[in-house]
Amino acid sequence: MSSEFWPGAEPFKIKVVEPIKLLPREERINAIEKAGLNPFLLSSSQVFIDLLTDSGTGAMSDNQWAGMMLGDESYAGSRNFYNLENTVKDIFHCEYFLPTHQGRGAENVLFPLLIKEGQYVPGNMHFDTTKAHIEIAGGVGVNLVREEAYKPSVSAPFKGDMDTDKLRSFIQDKGRDRVAFIIMTITCNSAGGQPVSMANMKEVHDIAREFEIPLFIDAARFAENAYFIKKREDGYQNKTIKEITREFFSLAQGFTMSAKKDGLVNIGGLIGIASDEGLFRRAQERLVPVEGFVTYGGLAGRDMEAVARGLYEVIEEDYLEQRINQVAYLGKELTDLGVPIQKPVGGHAVFVDGKSFLSHIPQEHFPSHALAVELYIEGGVRGVEIGTLLAGRDPQTGENVMPELDLLRLTIPRRTYTDNHMKYVAHVFSRLQEKKESIRGMKLTYEPKILRHFTASFAWLT
Ligand code: PLI
Image (cartoon, rainbow, N blue to C red; front, side):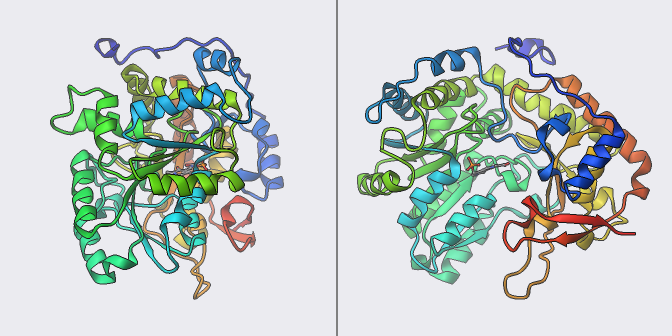
């Protein structure tokens, strides 16, 4: 481990570079206006620093690229499948494994096997595809994360924890039979990439066992979560990331995972099932028509090899140390400027509290989205609103939902940008800080019925 040298250098050197270009200001204004003031609709060539997502946007290692050349593209029984299966069984605590094309593919295969019409799925805080797949399967997703998660300025080591009092009352209130399963998202993306502690996972496990409700994990950022446990939770300082991961996963019946995050790949997903052979067989049956045969599940052999290798790289502590420190570095630079952010900084992104940064813009005029547009104009940086725009409308009343958190997510791709890029982003914020009073709110000029944030258009309020 390189920690004796930290703060120090990245534990990798750069072999291939991809040029990026900052367009002149006039061209940026033109580009964002043509995109309907929606950064999702910009071409990536118009973006200088792309912090839209950490999903599938990271850099693979030379070892992963070498593995890609060993892709065995046999329809059935590819050797890369067996490499990946052995890796998954080794790192996570599970007997059974299936590959999928990405995280939502895993949700689409597994959830209908677990949910009966009208049943609830409580979690700390569901990611939007997770909630969507719960609903498509006839269920209702419920967020029971601890209250501090909704307070950006309140710092706590494990803000992704489930509120176990709320969970117990929820099950007692609705009745055990109306709860399909419980899911823990690690780290908790929608709450700011905040980690879940081992102690909380154990409590949730005990409640799940008491009521005989299955417990699953949304494992997209499992290694970042394990790193936070190692750093912040008593008793884990001398455990390896793999040991922590195996212990954490031993508390659940299985997991879904988008490998596009902590699989360190551009595409891929996983389903792991601890020991329930019946569930595994049913998942296998469902996988074939919707994803692909059981030994490729929507992935090329070479992609499975890249995941198999990525999963070992992501649990290396010097990798995780640099990763988490880079995100924290951007958070510190912004805090030093007086920009309000979700505290403490999470694992994969800095979440700027747009509602309080632009407190002159009422929430119904999308302050964090207005900030995203201004960030692009000012410096060619693309972030994403996680707030009122994303929350959409109440299906019953048609009114805009007003979430407690209205944030701008600056998501850092893995092994992709340097600390100088982070410094640049902070510099752009220092310019925004000076002119923030002049930033205007927005109104929708085109609004799709579902998942409106992806393709909506806007106009500035005069
Ligand atoms: O994008 P997918 O289908 O590979 O994964 C869906 C997904 C599931 N769970 C969690 C916690 C996610 O964060 C997630 C995808 N996240 C995206 C795309 C993001 O930008 O955060």
